[in-house]
Length: 468
Image (cartoon, rainbow, N blue to C red; front, side):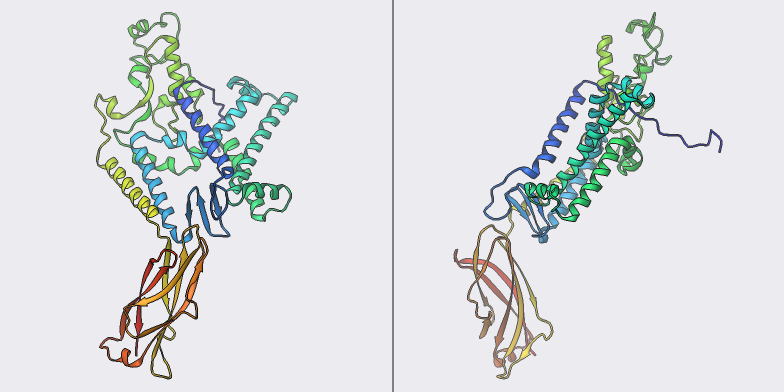
């Protein structure tokens, strides 16, 4: 294979640190995200019944505790609603402001940023890290690279441990993990997540955003002329004769304009701070995550030169052409209305959650039984699910079926513990004369579940009585 046809090798990226409004915003997001992720498993929450943790996925009990909300398997559609809201919100934000989710909120970005900071703290600024990478393995390189990898490993390990703590009592799980008494699934999960976090955030880095992330492949389909993207002002930066470094005769804005040279001094600072190593001056690229660090870098240079900011900025094609962007258009309004509608339905569903959920199944084999005295018997299984954190006593009765007798197996009342489910087998018997004089073989009626303590109907369950 010739050199021209050989695949290009990866060029290591050593991002340079930068100060500015976008960097400060990213730092704030980092702090908040890590406090939430690492802190939630330990956040206490007082409940009458259940664990004393604010957030917990109880697989054994089949419940999800989220602060004051308890989600059970039958409410899984709430998760579907949340996923729909998240997807539509991602599409809406992408259509308005580009790939900002990747730049500020993506897990890959958040953990890579932390790993970059560790690398910078141990090895120094960009030139020092490049020099360290190129020098042969000696005592200094072994010490600095070893410390970097150790700290990466500790972060990855604690990230993995924290993930598992969401699935049980954090203190108990942590103790059992280090004493060898934890479930095997916990050890497997910690090993896998430690390896993937260390690899993706420490070694693969920008390769994840460029080659592995599917979002980067279809993001452009959501852009339009009004989408604000990180962009380089080609006309201002290049002028007539292109960009040029600061040198004799080209040190002031007036001299450069007279010479036809743009405001870009070709310092390369925007490239050096980019976490994916692209040159934004070459236009929109698939690897750009719209983090805005190149804007901070360029603004710092413009400030030092005494020139206006904005050579690199968030801008849209419409603004570049001198127009005014339209946020309220069919696409964005459609996304916004969909988000509002689904959110309203979800909030209503959660706020109107019934204290008692019921379901009924009629025995089909046989559908009815003719007893020795000529009466007809139908059997039913009634499921009652207590959705509250209190004990409840319920009585079962029926209405709408004349001259019928309800047999609950001798239980006048049933007690349901908090968040527990009870299956109750009942039979309804009706005399043959009453059942046979009807033109229809099916008679509708209702089971009534009464809350004994409150003296009111907790649920009314429709059912059918079948006759020969």
